[in-house]
Length: 254
Image 1 (tube, rainbow, N blue to C red):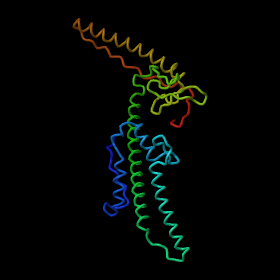
Image 2 (spheres, rainbow, N blue to C red):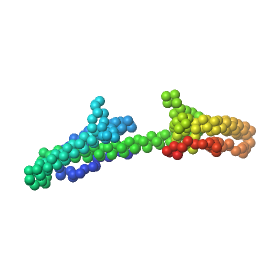
Image 3 (spheres, rainbow, N blue to C red):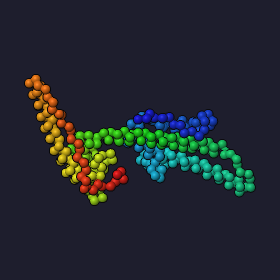
Image 4 (cartoon, rainbow, N blue to C red):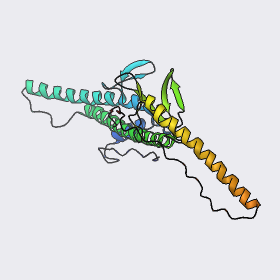
């Protein structure tokens, strides 16, 4: 997993605008990498900084603008006020102001600092979330058919959810199927999996274990009698293929 990177997004060099620098320092102090230990904690922080599709978030039980949206609104308010000053100058027949008044410029620098920190933090949180998802995906891939197609399932609310480490979903017809990209049985209805994969595999494995046990027994007898043994160790059977006449469920991951 990537280490947390310092925030880099700056629109002014350090020391160029002390007001901007001070406000950045204040907002950066709100960032605590210690909270980035779980996926849920990252999602929670991402919600505060970025918000939902409309830029809103729940903070301390109230629906409020996210930090990104709040910064944008502050900056927009500054620009609107400056446009208002320009319009007043036009209405008074005077020249347009070339620069913002000091107080307005201070508000602008504060809003820009907040906006830059928010954007940088959102980017960093998204990268962190991607790291967590990649690790979780890797862990899950390692569990796919780890013990072979033995028919071991997990239920979620009384419905089969995972089968031999493979995700299970409900198809268009309401029947369950294996919905696991990377699995050789992706798209296979679970009913077919149990009947044409699990059962044959268990029969093959039972035969394999019996032959393996016989091999070791004969090997031991030969050793005890001081004779050579040239028997061949039985090979573990391959997983049964998908039946040729089986119609797979089509998914986005197919």
